[in-house]
Length: 219
Image (cartoon, rainbow, N blue to C red; front, side):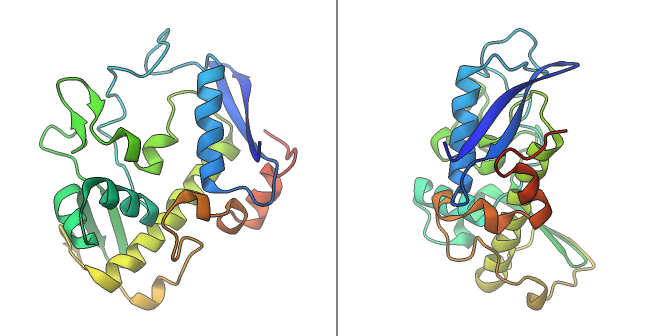
């Protein structure tokens, strides 16, 4: 596998560590490796001790869920929406604070995700759910894993903001906005419509790449 997820024992249970085995590894390889490991190993579900799966649990569906540009492409295609503005107006929240733009999945009045089926406690768009949902497991993990996940989210959301500046600029909440297009240069997500097209090496910092590539030390 281009990305390997390994089980690691922590003080609070069995968790995971990640290593990259190929320079050509993509974000999709990272996601697939996580899915495979989650099916193979009995990772400790911190929020559901003793549970074998996440079915019927919505513990993470009330948290902030940042979106990437690829997430929006995938969801727009899945929902049959023609434009970014059409998607954002129905399913996302755009907040601007000074120079910072934050684009997240919308939460309804009960504080939970717009895509959550309240009766079944299941995701209505599971096959097209965003990266933040596909890569969150309530189990322990190494610092490198969380850093890799955060780096992907940050670069992907930065590209979404660049797209938003060029095509929508819809705002739900703002506070002293000072957003300038020149502050949002292209990222490795530019022009990409799937995670298979985004290479991890281009997304991660050199330091982080060295720590996870081919047997990097796991602390």
